[in-house]
Length: 385
Ligand SMILES: Cc1cc2nc3c(=O)[nH]c(=O)nc-3n(C[C@H](O)[C@H](O)[C@H](O)COP(=O)(O)OP(=O)(O)OC[C@H]3O[C@@H](n4cnc5c(N)ncnc54)[C@H](O)[C@@H]3O)c2cc1C
Image: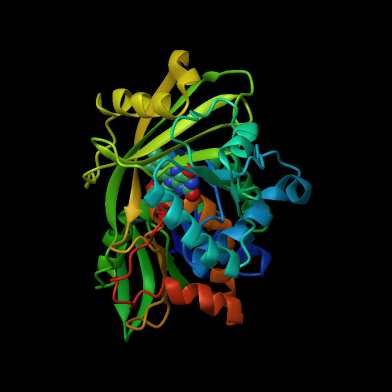
């Protein structure tokens, strides 16, 4: 056993684990992060396309992502590192009456939680996305406060800042077990050592269920494969991120935006879902998404794609994260099942987690956590996952 005792051991240095380590170190905790991979963010974090929105269907995610956006937006002035934040906004264009009606109904809930969102008619929307296909377009939502940033630049910077504040990171070290005595975790066992800590936080992403099992718990997180791609850089041609909610053969929604460097980055949700851990890119993805992108923005027809990749959403049965202190073990906490939004939720969630770990939860935190309760029934369904 390492002779050092930590206040907090975080299993997983990804989208959630790293910002939490930073905030915990800022709060004066002695933190250890253990990750199976060689450096920060090498799990699902680097697979994310960088979309950041507070445009969700429930108060919990809206509140957490509004906090995240404040952190991403001010990262450069706070820490002096450019993470390629761009306030391009998000839009959900509607091509059917059904989509228009459901988006407009949802806007009432979103506005009641303070989200800055409006409905644009087709002509106004075209001013933001001049190459949008106008045929059948009924209008679009627009949330100007949303944006994008680079997941890897962010995570590297957050890990550096955490290290400066005393956080220790152990890479290439897989957590293999937990020693439990009298209802508490007394040691975290890895492929290379044993570590003791006051509190243990599971941030293992797509492997969250595997780590929860080490504590004798079954936490319903299932890896759900999604592919993404990036084009060559092109002249600025897009405003906000476009999320098309229509179903097409092989996929439900898909979304794309133009990053600060000019590249168009895109991703879709396979239908049916593609369960399991398999990181091999498929030959289905590109033809399927290319058709969809050209349908929405015909001018993209000659765009050259540089690279595709396949990662995993750590999915839960209802599309909401699983965050909280576990009743079965005194000092065990989980922040897993971040689905398709772990990058955008990470920094805001980190603030709440540290307030939870230090007994300083606010009323708004409790409200958000109510949506992410590990002991909920999982019957409700997220509308904009
Ligand atoms: C194609 C694609 C596009 C996406 N786009 C977006 C987007 O635009 N915006 C957004 O917010 N999200 C997006 N996501 C989702 C996002 O990537 C995930 O929700 C997020 O990264 C999950 O964060 P996490 O911290 O839970 O997991 P991770 O970032 O994967 O971190 C978990 C870490 O735990 C480590 N680990 C696991 N098991 C162990 C163990 N036993 N011992 C030690 N370490 C362990 C892993 O190595 C990993 O580094 C996208 C995902 C995909 C696949």
